Length: 593
Ligand SMILES: Nc1ncnc2c1ncn2[C@@H]1O[C@H](COP(=O)(O)OP(=O)(O)OP(=O)(O)O)[C@@H](O)[C@H]1O
Image 1 (tube, rainbow, N blue to C red):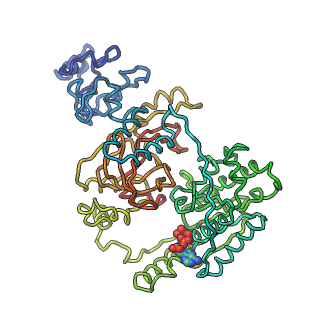
Image 2: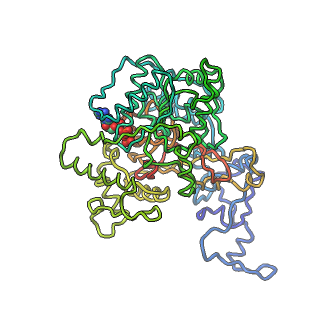
Image 3: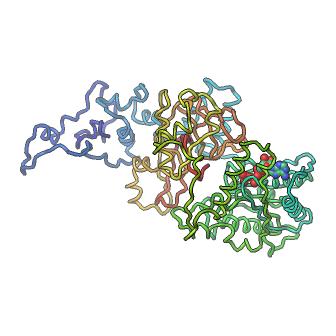
């Protein structure tokens, strides 16, 4: 703003009745006709004897006033003035990446400040310059499924669960607890007696292995198993996995009165009613009300089925939750420790009927060679477990002081952020083109602010031209918004909002940097919230990336801009941001990791 002569003082420029066409490109902006500016420059007093003095702090003399959308070109001019720096003439305002556009609206579109379906066609046209038809088709399917185009009806599809070939699980190496867990759940399914189970164990005890074995053997008999997970990334590790929110239509903001939106007689209701087993991974991450919603949903869907028992939990279906309470618990914005604990599944009335099956042997470590690396890993795992179980340090008032062993600390006296970056990303300048380099490393931080700071620091070290993508933010016109809110939340105010789960308004990228996807786009191909990728090409309307982690590693994908709505209960308003759904990920939050 500071460099912009149009914002310097209350200029006489009045665009209300004029469009850009009224000015020739060579005509300088009429800022010197401002009588107050002239007085200031000449140091003259006005009639009351007041004198103009330059501000001692900062350079901003005024702010642009609110311009409603209905004002057309004036509104677009207003949007541009927030970003175009150092403009000397009208051509400068309408110039984006060296191209001078005829109207302010066109220039806004080129800057990414508009939500226009045309950009999806441009994205396909742009990708077609370098991608093969197969990738273009996938991009087109992604655009259709992302529900961003206002002119197209979403085609809903129901995935039919395939029955797998006959399977006999290899549980020979299993510890006896796993065999007990397997048999208990398998019997509940085969005898149709229903049941609610929680498979509990720390990382590596074989929870995933057990549940995959169960799904495979039940599916091999021609039955349906619904595999869901609390997060998109966890769902990737399940055979035919989906997020619980998408499978059972559980609302994202859930409370004790929430219900899921599944109608009787629909294909989805039929699928749920036919399922023999429901497996829900990473269950401790979600609010207990999500499971209440599932209970209500099953009652609703099954109530006309033969043999429906209204008193049975989950209407007599076998429901298996799994997870580890030492890992991430439900996120309650600004919630106290008590509120978080109270939101967990084991604080629900359902928990009284839950049969907990505990796995205790670390299968991940158990079968490797006993070399020095594995011995160290085992020690580290034991140490982490003791912390998780609260056995470490002095635990007065539920807080412990934990001394981190020296071998886990940087061997530098008072290390700076730069030292940490160089430790995690050694020789970064030489390795940006390598996929494996970014696959295996990341810096974790507790808050988004620290993540942004680290990302910006590493980004500044990476050579190459940066490309800036601006988002288009609009307030959602919903019931409950006061007229005053609609007025005060100008586009610029929306642009300044940053919250978890949505990309930044000003996204700065370079070729070769690692990025993380912020929404579930195409789970079957590994594109979900949290998938890490590396940027390969930066187009105007599409970004080409290669997948770094989870499934489909090495696969090339094309990411278009998408509409994203932050799910943040603290914000008084709801708005939509159209931006590439990615964020830099040299660093990420501990929760995300
Ligand atoms: N019964 C078993 N026989 C042989 N290998 C096993 C068995 N159970 C688990 N494993 C192996 O141990 C490793 C860890 O298992 P798994 O991923 O199922 O653990 P987990 O409890 O789900 O871990 P996390 O909580 O970290 O996701 C895997 O490589 C798996 O193949």
